[in-house]
Image (cartoon, rainbow, N blue to C red; front, side, top):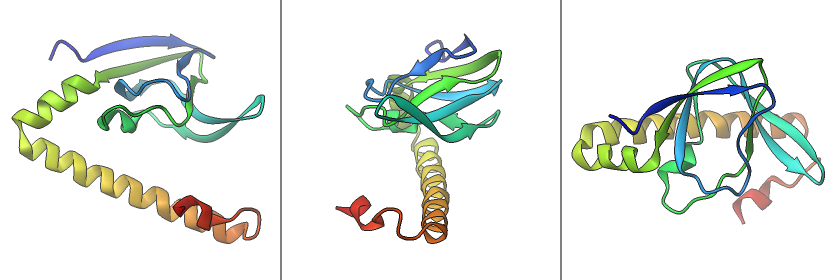
Length: 134
């Protein structure tokens, strides 16, 4: 598929900023990328992406914006860029791929929720988890 392409980034290069339109899903082939939230004038790393892992998954949702900033944290990073329109075209033409992707996303988010709740239990009282569901 011609829309899918590889791109190289250098250290400290921003892949995307929080609030940018979510236009592509990325897969880290080589190097390192951190996902960061900005708090006032600082960035806090929330996760370090490992080689072979995807990020920017909210690009699968129409008209969504990035919820974190992605920054290269190694000398070089090689990413596969999959534009959201290419993914949506694949979903329309192959329901099995769409179903597998949805199943994978459900598993991914289940794991993230388990990590969130585990972290919350360890630091109980530092924030109100109930606000997440408001």
